[in-house]
Amino acid sequence: MASLIDNLKAWFAPPPVRNQTYLLNGQIFGESLNLGGGLPALTERGALAVSAVYAAVNLIAGTIASLPVQVYSREPDGERERLPSDNLWWVLNEEMTPRWNAAAGWEHLGLSLLVRGDAFLRIRRDRNGQVMGLEPLAYDRVTPVAMPGGARLVYVVDADPSLPAPSAGGREVLDQDDMIHVPGFGFNGVSGLSPLRTALRLAAPVASAMQDYSARFFSNGARPDYVLTTDQGLSPEAIDQLREQIQERHGGPENARKPMLLTNGLKTAPLSIPADEMQLLESRRFAVEEIARIYGVPPFMLGHNEKTTSWGSGVESMGVGFVRYTLRQHLNKIETELNRKLIRSSRKVLAFDTADLERADFKTLLEGFRIALGRAGEPAFMTVEEVRERLSLKREPSTPFPALAAPAPADPEPSPASAPDPETDGAA
Image (cartoon, rainbow, N blue to C red; front, side, top):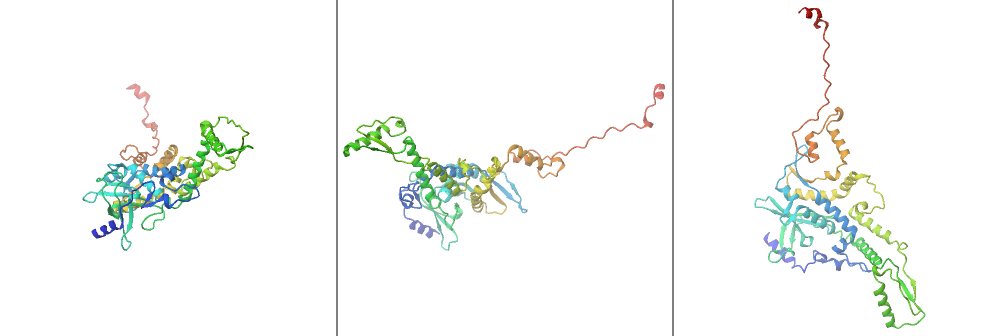
């Protein structure tokens, strides 16, 4: 094993000066994905500068970070029971390492997965092999490598550039049992497909170009471009001086309302097509829909409210649809990797709790619990304790739902034999 690690370190030459904006496994995005035609080179920051990309990534990654990870026992009959909090629960929900709180760690994992196609968490263990922490790693620091025969992976991890030497450490080679690796769509056994290099390769630069054009259009007071014409001849020096004066006195939104004084027979003639004719707004709407389609996010969840959603109405329908059709793909991969690397047992399982996202409105929720407790004499299948637990209320001793009490029998009428005799009572 030691010789293999030495060979891997030799195969991977010392990395160049890294720039987190442009590099992925040593390849410069600005060079390899320069599309030409005036479109901006595709970089991570360039993609996230597109509002629709930022909103979609922030929505999915932020939602993953907000979900609690619960530890369950898995019974032979397939049922699950939530276990009390332990050190693993603390790592997954509160503090991954002293440097990373859990919410920031999950958000970092989501960003890596949705932008670069792979996400990595280094597993820190104690001497007994128990999990002590998870360390999020930047995607450009980790290179997965297939072992001879292709049965397993190892990971070449570069030094941490955010730490000063020598605390940054050197290059390491980690076995796959010491790395949480969540690949994106298109995993080939080594790594997933990068959205930057595939789906966003054209959509993001086009959307960015339209966004920049809109900014320049409105920074010029939303005025069409124009030409100045005259029958008189002007020297090149006079033309340059006139151009500089117009830019100085009428450029920018703060000068949009200033009148232009023309002399020497100068006249203006518009050149550009009006914004409504060139369909700038419609093009930008289409760009939002295209990026939303790439990430599987309904456009209305990105603030694109022009069209109605087919997911029904209300927060309940939207939450259920978002979990079912968007989040579940990512959550399943994360849960599978956590279970096979951290648990490795058929008796316990880790799972994200999505109940809050799928919860109905309060009135509907209470009506459902009323049925579960046995409404109008129907058989109950939940206890009050279980309902209180679902509502995150304090646990109390299990109490069955009180059955409807039968009316108390009326006092019996006194029989004639036992009725008092007024004459006898009077004689007494």
